[in-house]
Amino acid sequence: MIKIQVLGTGCPKCKKMAEVAENAALELGIEYELEKVTDLNQILSFGVMITPALAVDGVVKVSGKVPSPGDIKKMLS
Image (cartoon, rainbow, N blue to C red):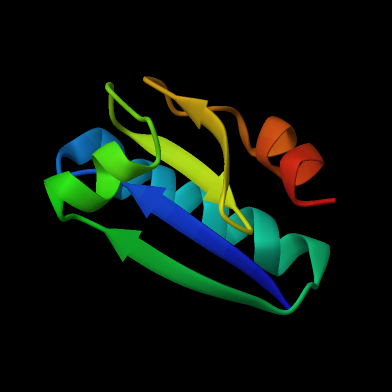
């Protein structure tokens, strides 16, 4: 099972990131757990300074933008 974490305070871009990541995981047919990390100290513990950010299995893959569904699929594969 893949752990997908969306790091952000709940802004519109953060919500879009969660939506795109979940859709990408569903399209790939993988087992996943989606966690929304909204606590600022926890976000900073990942080394993220700009949200939204996406972490896969605890590793930050992108921050500061919402990647395309295709890019997220590559991150999850």
